[in-house]
Image (cartoon, rainbow, N blue to C red; front, top):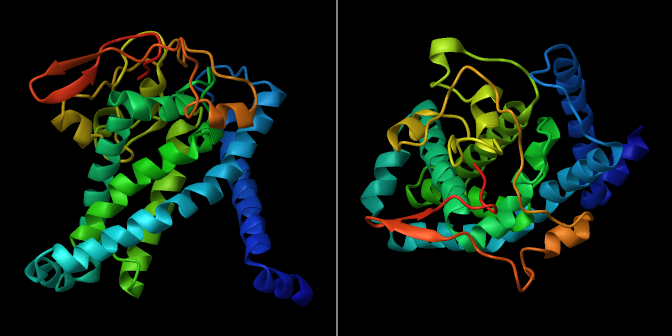
Amino acid sequence: MSEVFHYLHAYPLLGSVVRHCIWLLLLCVIFVPGEYFLAARSRKSSRKSIFGDVGFYFISGFVPHLLLIFPLALAAYAAYRFVPWRIHAATAGLPIWLSGLAAFVVADLGFYWGHRWAHKIPFMWRFHALHHAPEDVYFLISARAHPIDNAFIRMCGLVPIYLLGLGAPDSVKGTLTATLIMLLMTVWGFFIHANIRLRYGPLEWLLATPGFHHWHHNGSEVRDRNFASMLPVWDWIFGTLHLPKTWPASYGIDEKLPASIASQLLYPLFPPANRAEPPVARVGDIRVISPSPSSSG
């Protein structure tokens, strides 16, 4: 056993792969029984699609982190170079529990807008469409995302907490705060995608549930709703909340994506020449996408 730990220490990549395998096993132990005994709707995933979702699970575990290294380092530099020192002094004086709570709220608001922009900006929708393509939503769909889309939404949540001094990669406190937030959001992401009929009743607007997020993946009725990662209050404030007592009749988008993982990763970068972008209408000073076959909720 000591030799195993020696190799994991000597080869960080191997250690990371092992950790991701352990996490996948734990996720299966938690969610597979729940989706079997408390299923909200019947599953229709093929073995091939499940293998593809596992592939995206490992891609999402490694690639977005690499894509974020430079922009987050740049954000941390900008925070300490251009943000007034009084702001950082004020946040530095907060108790650890209060600064952590503030970082969580700020990050969740950033994730909300990053997610919403991924739907509203045609170029970003090319990447985000990959996450909405499945016609069967279950816990592993949380990791089924394009690395660029994944990195973009994470960046929208992390950059604000760096700018406000609530977290920064060059301090233990900052690193721990950002790491805990991402860990919490990641685990909750698997939960809200799970095919589990769990609702909170009148308290459901406080914390996101599978029932809340499944309507975000709805493929046939109301779309572009429920963007929040954990706090549905953002959708209530910004007018995108949709919480009926029922579950969606179907999932997915009308646009058909390539079958292989490699083709799906390249598809947003080299879209077909005849691929129509979602028509964009301007309401006030907010860009919104009009309903179209390539747009999903």
